[in-house]
Image 1: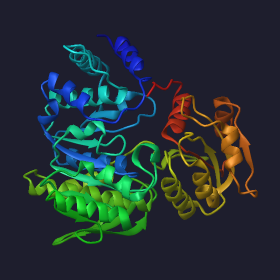
Image 2: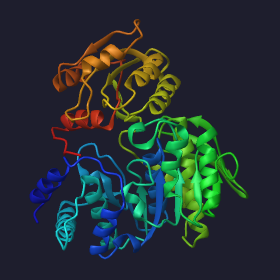
Image 3: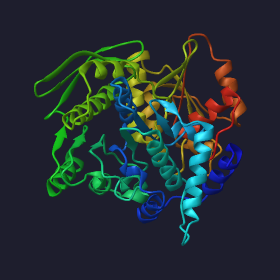
Image 4: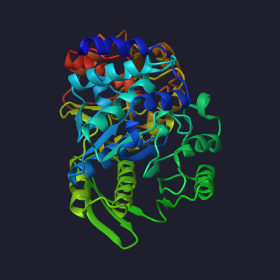
Length: 431
C-alpha cells in the first residue's frame, strides 16, 4: 500500500464515530500476533495532563537509551504525530506498511467493525513491535475502562487528574468519571496518581486496594516543589522517600507541568525498580529536552503567539493562571474555538481574567460549535468579543498583531491544529 492509499483508507474510517469497548481491538490484535505484548507498557490516563506526562516520560526513557514508543492523541495536523519511536514520528513508508497489515488482519475471517481510533491503536502497537522497542508509553484516548488502549497489561499505570469532561460517555459525577479512568489500574501493578481530590481520590484508592495495586500518590509517596519560572520551562525539586532531586528543569511552561513531571519521574523510578536502567542524569536530561506541541507553545516570540489545546474548564483555568502569571491580567487577545459537547461557557469564564479580547472561531470538524454561539456564551461585557468569518480572519489577526501584543489560540486541539496547518500551508488530516 502506498502512502496516499493508506491516508485514503484511514479517512474512510474517520467517520465511523466513537465506540467504547475492547473486544474488537482484542480480536484485531490477536490476528496481528498480539504485538502489544512484545514490550513493557506504561499506561497513562486522566482528564488533563496525560499527553504532557507521556511525552515527559518518553523523553526520560530516550535520554536513558531505552528504545521506546509513544502513542498519543489527538493529532493536530497529521496522524503521524500520534505514533513515535525515540521521539521520531512514524515515517510515511512505515505507516503505509502497518496500515496495510492491519487492514489485511481486519478483513481476515469474520468482519470486525473498527473505528479510526481502534485501527490506529493497532497500527501503533504493531509499529512498536516491529521497531523492537523495550517500552511503550501509551496515552488513553478517553476514559480508561472501555478505551481501546486498555487491552494492554501495563507494567505501571498513571492517572494524572480527574475533572468534569466527556460527561455523556463517562458519567456526570467525579465518582463516575474516576471509576472509568481507574479501569486502567491492573491487578498487582503500581499506579501513580496525580493531584486527585475528594471523591475522585477515594475511588482511585478503593479500586487500587481491590486490585492489590500499590498507590504512589502525590503529596504522600512523592512530591514536587516549584522553584522558579524560566523563560523556556519550570525549575523544581522532587522527593520520593530517599530520592531527592534538586534544581530540575522541565522544558514545558506552567505549574501543572511541574505536577506532570512529578508523575513522569515517579513512573520512571518505578520502572527502575523493575529493572530498567534509568539513572538520575537521564531523568534530568529527559526533563530538560522535552517538547510538546500545543501545550503553552510559544509559536512566535514577538509579537507573542501561543498555542494551547485547553479543551475543558479545568484546562482553561490552568491556562488562564499561566497567562496571568507570565504576562499579567487582561493582556491576551484570545482566539477561541471549542467543540459543542464541551462546557465552553465555563471555559470562556475561566479565561476571562486573562483576556483583552475574544475572537470566536470554528474549525472545520463536525463537532465544532458555531462561533456565534461561542460569542453569545462570553458573558463578560467588559471584554470585546467578535466572530471570525473564517480561517482567513484568524490568520489576518495573527499577521497584523502589534509588536507588544499577546495572541493565544485555544479551546481545542482541533482549533490550534487547523490554524497551525494554515500557517504551514498544509491541510489537517481527518480524525
